[in-house]
Length: 216
Image (cartoon, rainbow, N blue to C red; front, side, top):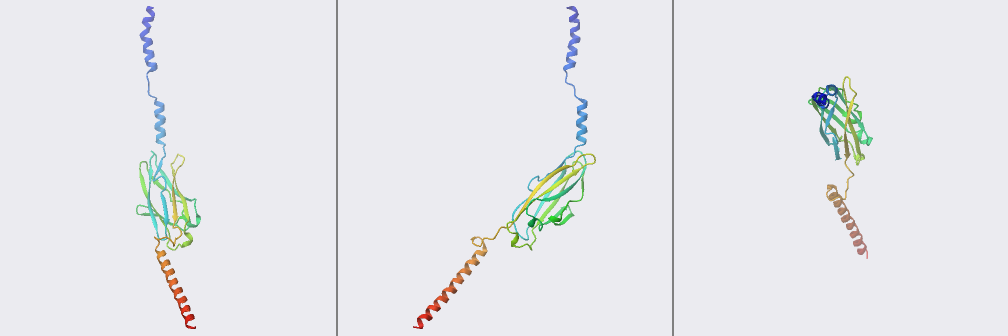
């Protein structure tokens, strides 16, 4: 019994050491290494960069998209464009892309393949000014068409797999003109034309009736 009391402080010390929570040095080193290799690209807005209805010839729509390097590693990125809607309208829409005062692209959306690689260091961002134009020469054959498309962003680092993000867009062209609508200025012209035609027809009928009576 006396021997047990002598060993009791030693057993207590061993128990305290065994159950005391010690930090994991290896886990911290692993997390730090993962953070150093982190490749993160963020864009804003993330959804529906363009959501335009009733776009008419001569209209244009400017938008700003922010590309941010939110990770701990520098990367280069590209922007690509994919059409997923009506090709007839998509093939005619015009696209302009600028970064500050630098023009990166100007031409048809259908001809755009990708932006040249652009570099973003860690914790930095840049704004891309994107404008879509509806050419003035497009006629009534483009009424009611819808173009759906998506901008894809691809970030690549030196020793990391690429990261992809995407934002969507939609452009709906002007709908068919409703001549019967009271808010349509053409409806007044149509009504005046009908009223004038009715007066002319009434005059012709009145002349025939008058001549018929005079002949008797």
